[in-house]
Amino acid sequence: MPQSSPARNNSDQPRTQAERTAAAETRMVRAAIDLLNTAGIQGTTLVAIGERSGYSRGLATHHFGSKAGLFRTVLKQMTAVWTEELVRKLDGETGLQALTTAIDTHLAHVLRHPDYILATNILWGAALDPSSEFKPNVAEFMQIQRESVAAWVEGGQALGEISTDINAARIGEQFYGSLIGINHQWLVSPDFDLSAAYEDFKQNIVRLLSTR
Image 1: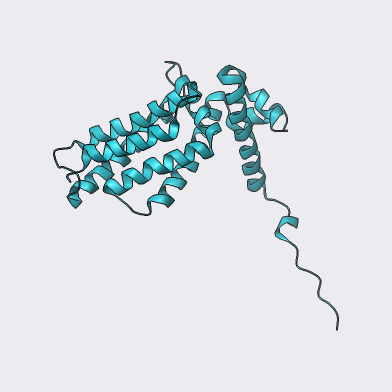
Image 2: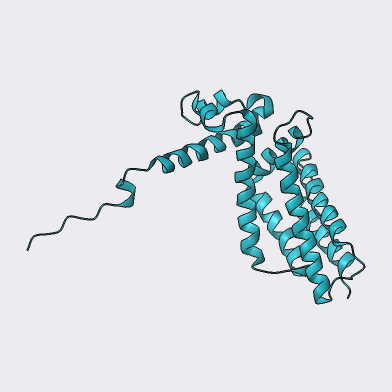
């Protein structure tokens, strides 16, 4: 009986143009994160990114168009990682449980991806420049985070576990601002106790909001 030839492994199949483009973008974003964390904003040039990622010098320019376009993509990809982790952990939770889960998940994310956290803060700092072209992207991301927290607070109010006297939008601002402040201190102070700061924040937010 003749033997059939083995099926070709998916890895043997030639990649499509879309797959090659996605792979190139991933490598260049990774190179950009590395450069941001070692050379800063000024050293993270499109030429340097193309060279570090192993492509031609002009590919990053061709792909992203400008430095601002690159930084928008970097922020988008790092944000997507955090959002996916959070949504998976929340699994539909709301109220106090969502708030505490978000704090624990954020700490785990920071410890798992310290390079993302540093690069994100560097880009957020650069967005304060009046001439920044990607400032609207940062503002949009922060607004989404605040609105998510406010929605959890409103969910807790509907459940009766959070006082209806609480202004959900204001808590969203304070909650997200606290996480930013904690991480900023940790990034600039090597001896800062990050885990303790997160745990204290979690306990304080529950005490502040709980009706019990």
